[in-house]
Amino acid sequence: MKPKKLKIAQLSTPFINVPPKTYGGTELVVYNLTKELVRRGHKVTLFATKNSKTSANLEYAFKKALGLGMMKNLLSGLAQKLSWAHALPSLYHAVLPFEKASQFDIIHNHFHYYGLFFSSLIKTPVLTTYHGDFATAERSRIEKLILEKYKKNFWTAISKSQKNQVKTKLNFLKVIYHGVPIENFPFSQEHQNYLAWLGRITKKKGLLEAIKVAKKTKNKLVIAGTVNPRDREYFRKEIKPKIDNKLIFFIGPVNYQKKVKLLKNAKALLYPISWEEPFGLVMIEALACGCPVIAFNQGSVPEIVKNNETGFIVKNTLEMAGAIKDIDKINRKKCRERVEKNFTIEKMVDGYEKVYQEILSR
Image (cartoon, rainbow, N blue to C red; front, side, top):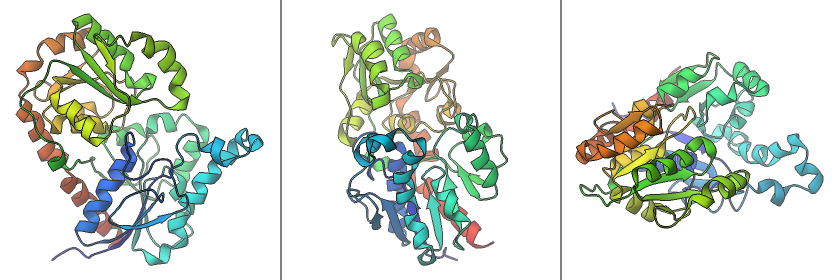
């Protein structure tokens, strides 16, 4: 029996367009999920920004992605100083699918807690996929209150690590890993003589540690990433002085084509994170190209990287430096196979389809 075709609302964020031009993990996942659901015959409405591109029906509150500078653009000088005012643009966007809730079989909320606030006011079921770090969230008193209030809602986790972080007993229906469109990440058996680092440049992402390892091992490191306003001082003081364009190179934000080229030609992706990251999308993008990952044992890393087979899981920069010497022992084809088996778009969407049907059968 074929699964019923559904009318599904996907609520993305208003901060980054779908798909993102450069950085934006949540928005990229929403794009791929929406595209595959439409391909499978579901009637999907994407709530994002007008400058988004999608095969689904598009609804929006804002014409352009707000970015992290939204407060300066939308709020007056006084309002920028009022913490409660910062939620106004987000709520203005998040309410959209709930105003039209009767048109949908299910609403899938990817926008933090904002979708939760309206969920009890409608009959249409709401599924929340939280893309953030529960360990950090539960250190906030208000976030703990929110999680407690909405713990009986329908939730999915994006990794076992993320699910285990949260102390509040949320109603998790399933752990569904992110997937990538494997056909868009060409495999490369060969590599060039450089290491790669890719991501948002912030302290917890470990770029400083990656630079130290590259210098210690005398390996070329190519850095690609975005610098958000709140991290500019960190970049200016800690990172920029170390970019010498001899061993350490910074190429700035990269689009899809440049990202693929960087990853498939790298001999390894360095991933020395210092936080419980719920899911590192760049790791599966690298593995899909055949690029091994050398990562610190944090968050979802051991769920993605198979130690000694698709890369190395290490404790510190000393071990990371040692792992680089052994990188050619890794079979790049095994890296690709790891993604083909566990982290495809098809596998991800299979998981969400089953959860949608489970919710609607109750």
